[in-house]
Structure formats: structure tokens, C-alpha cells
Image 1 (cartoon, rainbow, N blue to C red):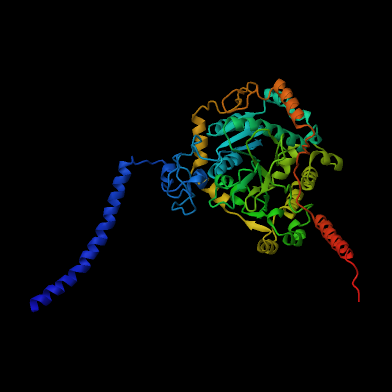
Image 2: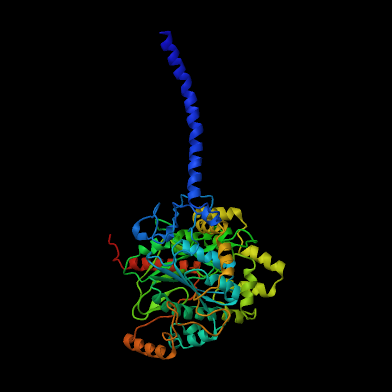
Length: 536
């Protein structure tokens, strides 16, 4: 009996010892196993590889027809993120080149006319790659067309550069657009109108390039604008557009406008998180009820435009309708407006934006001249200040009219839903920057000669390669075919009315609400008077 008791006691004492041994050996075994796996994998020290979590890939990079793509490799070999990242930085595609040869659908391209440098353009491009854009047609001028910047942009797969060469201008001078009426009110005017016409001509050319490249959707966007694909199950523009009914031709993204809270912003995409919502995404009573507080003494609810941007299906007879919309030569497009998705417009986010606008236009700071140069009231006011005031006066004006310094008012409008916080673009771009992606792109371009990536090289300003596969051919937009095609379509369409191109338009003002209210009131009085008088 004593021996049995002794044996039992010994067994109880050895159990903690065995447990301690297991807890000690197990971590060591796991660590050894991990070391073996890393050693067998080649022991890569590439920081991009180390920061790329294998089980995840960008939600925008997976095929929306195959589900969410969580923990599933796509055909492009990229790995996806779904917001549940285990990495210390925002996950990104392991191969920074983003395989543009994938069979992901729908295929989306963006066309833009830009003079911006790499500090703005690189985050803009790769953010849109993350959410599902595969191809970019960039019509470059100024800093964007310089040899060093062009070399970097041309090295990015899916990016096509079109330089503003003499040949390009001669080609666009023969465009059918000059013989039509829908854009004529903007012809031969300076500054904003000149840019508006140039953007329309570039959009016309990009339609041909998009068709040749097999694109499904085309979007015109400036490099100070980011698409915010809210409303999709994942943060994916591909998924959003794949859910659009097949009979829809164009999709309007209402724009939200940046609301800066400091006067020293240097990188808007990663420093600005507050935006003012569009009228289309607000209840009418909320919008007009807070109109004066939200406007803060400025000419309008938004500083600049309020009529959004649009995406169009690439199809026969597609044409631009100004920088904000698309149209069709043969029919009135079936257009829908999205309830949640938006274009985030980062306007006047930096104090230097005041002088940059002034320096782009050779206009005089007079009432009559600025009306010819600028379409929107705030642009006119900003140009006057930048042209006539001292640096100190400009800064004071900027703080008063642009920067949201009143925290109490900001909190009030956030509660009402006029203002909103949006962090996804900031997180994506900051994560890409921290991963070393942008530095890798620049470094790679410095050591690699780019080939066959643009219509014309920055070194040879007058020899555009217009016959490359996937690029607009001079045969397609040349003078003879342009004139013949114009005549044929005009004859086929007969008296079809095109309407005028849609310019940048300000959001509704209180005057509009008052007129609508009076119309409703008048209708109600008229209806009441039509009833027969009561008897007795």
C-alpha cells in the first residue's frame, strides 16, 4: 500500500516537469522548423519580399467573378488584402510591377492630362492599381514630360505616355470635334477653357487606344483625384463596375471635396482625411439646412466643381462630353449615378496651390479677364488674391477660406454628415510608401532603359510612335478619315441633338432651393384652388 502511494506521488511530481519540458521544447522546435523553411526558400533579404504577406492580395486585383479572393491566389500571381492584414504595413502586391497581362475583368483604364511630378503621380497610379485599374493613358506636359519623370513613368507596366509634340497637336487639330457644335462654346478661350478643350481632345484619342487595348471601361480623372469605390463588398473598383447592369452605358461618381485642417500640408493623399460630401449623397434638408455654415462665406458650397466624374463602357460611337462626362454619337447614353462611391477631389490642399494656378494662366487680375480665364467663382477669387496680395495676406486669406480651423464647427458638420472622414486611400498610399515601393520604381527606372512604353520619347520631341500596338494610330485619327467619318455619322444621325459639353458645375445654391420651394408652394395653391367650393 505504501509502495502504491509512493508511486502515485512520484507520478504527480513528474507531470509538471514533463509539461515544462514540452513547453520548452515546442517553441524551439517551431523556431527550428521556421528556420528550415526560410533556408529552403533561399533566405531572401529583399525588403519588398519580407514585407509581402503571402496569404493576402489586393481586393482590387482579384477577379470579382470568382468571389472575394480571400486566401486565394489569382491568375496574375498577386496576393490579396481584405483589411485583415497581419503585416506591420498595408499589404501590397509582392511584385510591384502588377501583372497587367492578367485575365481579370472588367478591364479598366484611366485617361489623364497632367503636368504633375512623381511625388503626386506615383501614389496616384499605384493607388488606382490597388483598386483594380490596369491601364493608364497619360497625356503629359511640363514636369511630367521631363526626361527623368517620363523615364520612371514609362517603366511602369500598363502606363502609356503621350507627349504633347508638334505631331500630336497637328493630329488633334484635324479632329472631328472642331467641326461639331457640342464643344464650340469653349473654343479659342484662355486658361480653363483651353484646358477643357485639350482634355476633350485627349479623351477622344484615348477611346481609340482603349479599344485597341481591349478595355471594358474608361474613366477621365485628374491626378489630384482618387476614386473611392465605396458600396462594393470589397474596396475594389473592379468589383464595383462588374456589378453595373449590362444596359448601363455610363456611371457617374459624385465628387467629395477635400477639407484641409492645416495650412502646411505637403502630401495631400496621406495627410488629408476629411472631405465634404456631395449634394447627391445628402438629404436635401441636411444640405440646405447647413449650407451657410458649410460654405463659410465662400461663393459656393464647394470651392470648385460639384458635378462629379464618370466612367463609360468602351463601345461603338463613344465620345467625350467635356472632362466630366461621356456621350455617344448614335444614342443618348443610359446613365446611372452611384449612391456611395465617389471621386475624392484634393483641391487647394496646399498653400502653394494658390500661386500655381496663378502661374499657369497669363491672365490679368481684372474682373473681365478672369471671367474669360476661369469658369468657377472661387478660382477667380483665388487668382485675384494670388496676383495682388503679399505672401502674408495670401496665407491669411487661405486660412480663412480654405483651412478648417474652427474645431467646433467641424465637429458639428461631421455629426450632421456634411463632412466625413475617409481613411482608406491614406492607409493604402502610406503603406505603399513605407514598403519602399515608390523608391523601388524610381531606382529601377534609373538603371533600366525603357522601351516601347510611350507614343513619343522625351528625347525626341517630334517623332511620336503612333503605330504601336494598343496606341492610337495616325491612320485612325488622320485628316482624311476624320472628315469622311464625320460626314457619314452626321448623315446617319440626321437631326439627332448632341447638346453642349458639360463643364465644371458648382453644387446647388440656396437660391435653387428657394425657387424649388416656391414652385412646390405655387403648385399646392393651384391644386387647392381647382377643387369646387364646399357647400354648407
